[in-house]
Image (tube, rainbow, N blue to C red; front, side, top):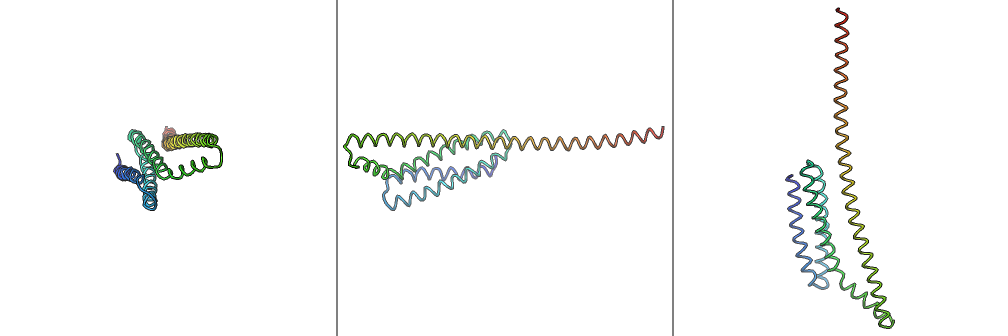
Length: 188
């Protein structure tokens, strides 16, 4: 395994552990302290995403047997980071969601109708969130497939270039052989 990859991985694990602790502590905070903690979390998430991209590039530059294992680790790290992002959204949004629910309930409609409307809106919101999550997963899978195809094309290009050089070498050798045979036939 690459020392560079291991360095990125070590940094990612440290930041990931810190993110989990920060998310847990942020849920107990309010006001300015909570906003400050959420800003720290956001910065750590961005740093984690950067490290994952760096690990991805490093892994793809390694031999195929090593690459497969590292890409599997990366998929797990991406999944973990997505979970942390979801948890961050939950921590940062409960007050906003509660306020929106209360506004819908107190919108001047009779109680049952307001609650029904709230339930329908919540259900639509949950369905939309699920579709977005599925789209993100599909996009990540598509990106991985695209990178893999590009790597395969690059390898095939290198193979063709080596074959082209070999063919030119053989062609040169045949040309020399023809000249030698022609000169030998003149001496006979």
